[in-house]
Amino acid sequence: MNKVMMFVLVSLWLFALPTYAAFVVTPQELSTQQSTVLDARSTQSYETGHIEGAINFPVDWTYEEKSVDGTIVSPAKAQSILRKLGIETTTPVVIYDNGSMMDAARLFWTLEVYGLKNVQVLDGGYAAWSSLGLPQSLDQPARQASQYVANVDHHRIVTKLTTLAATKNPQQVIIDARSPSDYLGKTSTAKRYGHIPAALNIPAAQNIRTTETQGATFLSADKLEHVYAEIPKTSRVILYCAIGRISSSNYLALRTLGYDVANYDASWHQWGNDENLPIHGGLSPIVSP
Image 1 (cartoon, one colour):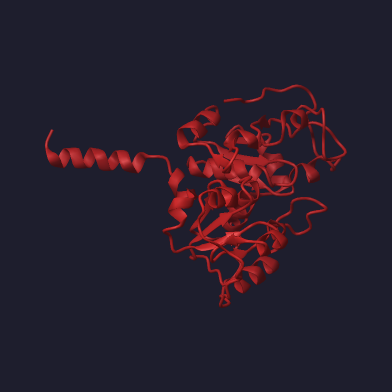
Image 2 (image 1 turned 90 degrees about the vertical axis):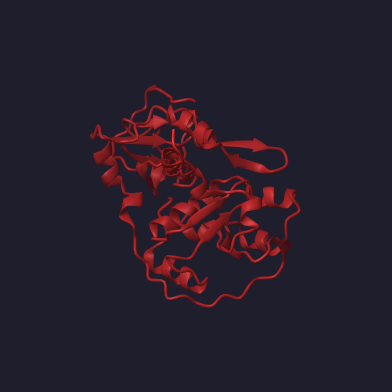
C-alpha cells in the first residue's frame, strides 16, 4: 500500500471517529484553552471559590419558573443574561458544575437552544478540577457586554404537542431519563404516575460513572454507544425527565454520538399534570446497557 493511499485511509478513519471530544473536555484540556468558562453552580458556591477566570451562570437561570416546571428561560431573559456576560453565538464556552454533570448539561442544552455554536462541558466539573490542584480564584472577572440577539434553535427543543405527535411516529424515539421507579409508575413528581406512551427508559445515571475524588465523569464514547445501541442513528430522539434537567445529560451523550436529538423542557411536570395528555402506567421494557 503506497503512502498516499495510507494517508487517505487514516484520514477517513479519523473523520469517522465519534465526536465525543467536541463536547466534553478534561480539566487538563481546559487548562490550555482560551475559552469563556461558565460556572453553573449557585452564586453562593461560586463566591466561595471557582475556576480561575470563570464567570457565574447559575443553572437556575435556565428556567423560566423552576417551581412550576422545567420550561426554558424566555428569549428576552436569555438575551439579557448572555449580553451581560459578554457572550456571542460564536464565543467558545466551557461549562462546569459541582461534578454531577447534570446542571452543566442543562446549561449546555440551553445555550445550544439559543444558538451558541461552540459549547463544551468540563468532565468531572469543579470536583475534578479541584482534585488536580488546578488554579482557582475568588475574583469575579469583569465582562464587556455583547450584542447577542436571541435566536431559538427549534430543532433542539420540543413542546408537549410535538412530543405527542412523536408518540405516533415510528421515525421518532422518545426516551424517559427518569429512574425506573418513576418510569414504571411506582413514584412520580406529578399528580399522575407512569410515562409518556412509546417512551423507552434510559436513566440519566447510565451516562456517567462516579469516582470518589473527581465527581461524576462521562462515559467514554464506545461505552455510550453501548448504552444507546438500541436507538437507531436514523431516528429523531426526544428526551424528557421531571423538569428537563437530568435528561439534558442524555442530550449531551446523544450529541456526542451524532444523534438528531431534542429535549422536552417542561417534561413530566407538565405532561404528568395535564389530564388531556395520554400516559402509559403499565410495565414496559427498560433499556439497559
